[in-house]
Length: 357
Image 1 (cartoon, one colour):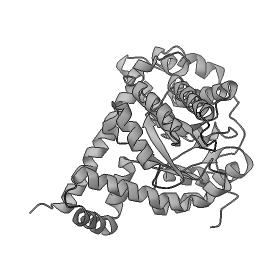
Image 2 (cartoon, one colour; image 1 turned 90 degrees about the vertical axis):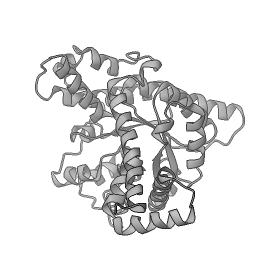
Image 3 (cartoon, one colour; image 1 turned 60 degrees about the vertical axis):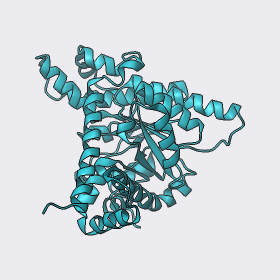
Image 4 (cartoon, one colour; image 1 turned 30 degrees about the vertical axis):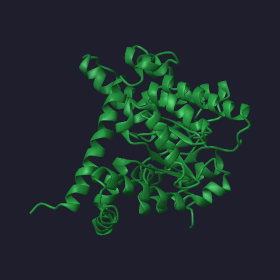
């Protein structure tokens, strides 16, 4: 596949340590994203719902086949079978990048069932099962106190980890430390040492969303545009602290709301994972490629952000205690969206199998 090396995304991927992943497992989008230089992708119920809705000619017959093959399965089991199939197909497209990077890239992220978010052992068991789907699978687990414990145990058992439901520096640091403990435990127990490609997501755009909602509820007026830098500031600080502490996992930037969430991170040994449409727009607009990861957020912008108590909770390394990870506003809102997508996927399967008369 020919890569447009003049396009900003490809140029950044070729000339800096920054890796591009595609925030979708849709096969058409992923193939085009690989042409932009992408070396990773993700799947979850939201993505599966979108992919199935876009291709009813493919997924309607396939879901009916699955129902015939498994007559006792309910809508949820059938929907998650589609998630698995989408993930395995996308993982195949990424095998060349996986081989070329020795396992650091070429990963397909599959998300654990959000309905398991309170059950550590169930999260671990599903993560282990998902890791067997393909050699280059990486499993998303929520960055709550329960999820961090699950990530540590799953990583110890050899699962490649991608933290999700993660918006803040304290969450990222908690996950980074847990993955270090898992790697050290494996070494101490003489288990295989290899490249797991662990990544720790910060959903920067969703942090921006939450701070805008919070500031509005508090009737706080901010300088226009300042809150669009909140996620960038958190991502830059987390990346800096990961390097400072020697963590072997990488930060991943997700939930794009503006091009800063790519351009301000270029140069870092991290992953940026925009939706395909954001990738196309970055290329179409020829956003400048410059090493900006260590360029601090402007003093006046950061100073204004730090007047907001909710931003300080997200930005300071000790701003949130682990038992607050699940109750942080962005966490609650995003978990609800994940759970709603699961319910919508169930309903979509139901409509295919039992259409209204």
